Image (cartoon, rainbow, N blue to C red; front, side, top):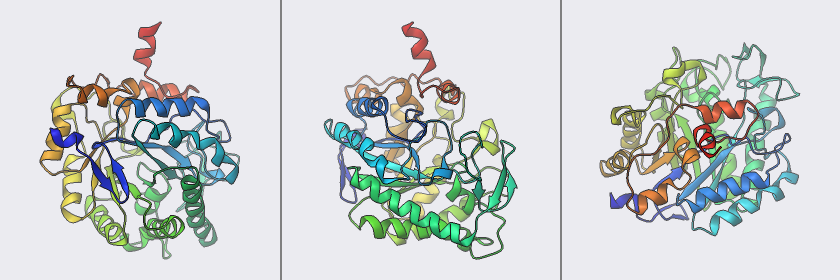
Length: 368
């Protein structure tokens, strides 16, 4: 279990332990995506709580890429200054912080963006909104938008960049035949469907240089009929590894997969319910030479330690448990090892869709 608290490095980024706060949508920015003091303090509390690497909840790289209310934006230069206090605060506690870059693609609601909804192919999304197929010019512009967004993040002092290519957002939509019905060079076989992700990766690397850690969060499988398969994901991860990606976070699922196969599953009550992407992560790790970060339902210190000891992953990522217990990692480090208090009921996310910042509803009720 000592391996969980040993120091490691991802590229030039030194980490004090193997715990990662996996990105989630905090719902603490302004309507235009500007970071607030509330978000700064929320992130600083995670750093005080002992986590080694904090990945900020997905920041949209174009104005039409907003996926949720009060989501953080990184699509304009004038948003940079509001983000600077985050790395400044996080570094005070010996933690590192990455920004996750994203575009919602067809996975958004017209209530949240004033612009046409775009995606790899024409469709009607789960909100009943029409999605327009992106032109080649728009794809080229998207690649540039990710590059410029990465430059802004590094300019704001962030330690690393993560590309969000999971959970039904734009890059995942291009990877997946469930959404991608294109007939051109960005559709068809996986070699073509992965082209957008590879171009974004190359563009960001060109923008930030070889020493900035560049990570990808990817769906191991979509868990929908006709979706991205593990076999295809392994091929993509091999290519990313060869291209110089510094770490891959393994996740899976999407809203369309249903409640039991979503990325954030409910009802994790026993050890056998935990680490529900473990098998897929192990298969990916066997195929690549870069570190693997595993997310998905990990609640017990013993489970986390066994995953690392067995070599199934190199880092343990948590999200919902740290919403209820931002000091969970410090608790475990001090020797207090009972499992996380998170009930996996998703009330924290449900509250955010209701217009509130992400928070643990159970803990808030206890304080009243």
